[in-house]
Length: 162
Image (cartoon, rainbow, N blue to C red; front, side, top):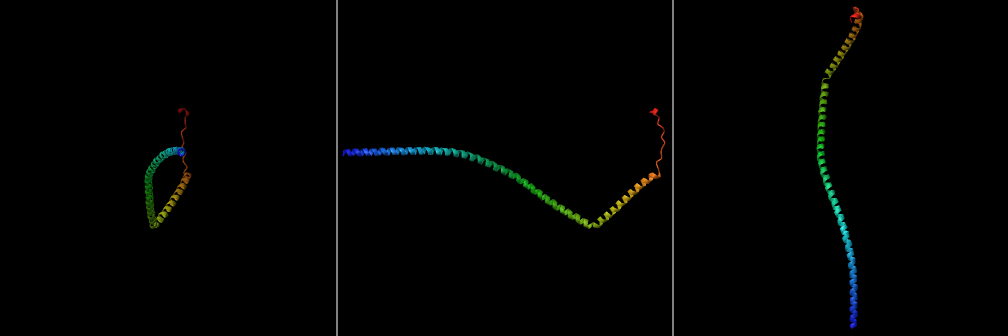
């Protein structure tokens, strides 16, 4: 019986040894897995740091662009207001021109007879002027033929007196 105790103790010690060895193998595999996991987490941490830095820079650039766009939008609003004012002024000018045109047309219609008389008198004046020019030319051409210019005798020029 003693021997049985020794065999059972030996079997228990063998089982315990196998348990310890398998536990050591398992813990070694878990250690390798945890080391690999720690390396992966460290690499992810580095990548996240890079992404965070790039995201921060991108956010700063976006904020700068938004401020620039707001400034340009404010400037553009003043230009739009100015163009709107020009449009209003042009519309008022068109209205004024329309009123003036209507006034001139109305005045012309009212003074149509007077305008016709002025045109007739100006035509008469032009005819009189043309006739006067024609007569003046005729008189000038005939006057030189009627009365020729007298010739004057000049004293002889002495070359020694020069």
